[in-house]
Image: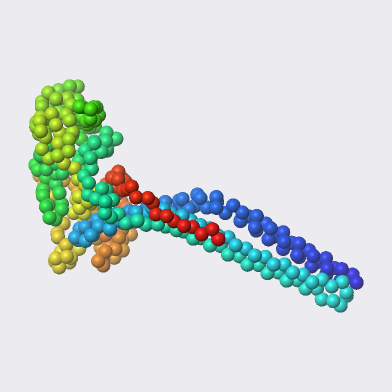
Length: 366
């Protein structure tokens, strides 16, 4: 009789302890959504950022080979978590000494992560607006005003300044820069570092006009350099403010005409620096890398260095496979990394949104 009571107590204790463990498990899984916010934001941010970099580099390489641009925007990322559990308890107890005590315990559980990622190709009007439209001169000067080096900004974003041509590596109309272009940028960079170039916006004839402010009366050296800039650009020697317009030729000596580039032209320019395999050049699959002529005996450093190799490289900032080769930017090449990141930033300045509504995503509740 004592043995039966002991078995009964042990069975009840086992059932009780199992119920406590199940309740603790279910309580620990409560509120699973909020716990994933920090992890998911970091993971998806890293994944989207890396895919964005890879997509940009791949399109640069494709443009180098005469292939078509294809951009996919990640319009939404939705994660849905499902946690299901089922616990069944059963027990049969006998009070007799010879009776058998039975206990049945069954449990099932399922955890499901269902991410829903929506892509939208950049085509049609959106492509024309974001990729083919030249960047406004005011946006170019705003970058300079924000502290970006004026020589870097103008080398990348501008075709010409008051008719002085920049270098362009596009295969169809590749050209060297005019002899005055790079020395002009060097002088303007010096003026920017000394705070002698600024930007002002004011209304002219009821319209907003962008004015480039040229301050050159602090000392004789500064005045001399500013006069040299005015002379090269064909500006009024006494003008302290010049109106900035879009175009290749100014209408007067008080205008600064900037012919800016579109995103497609910017990508083509940077793609001209891609170091392609010599075998692809010999097979006429791609043109040789466009070489810059030295200026006054000095070589102009490339805007970016993109290497190629048959094997997958290590220590890379970003890399993509294409036509049996790997194209990559060295993680130890800080200037190239900065230029690539600057390109990504410029890409965000172009308008990619349209009037069309975002895609409708239906998430099941069950």
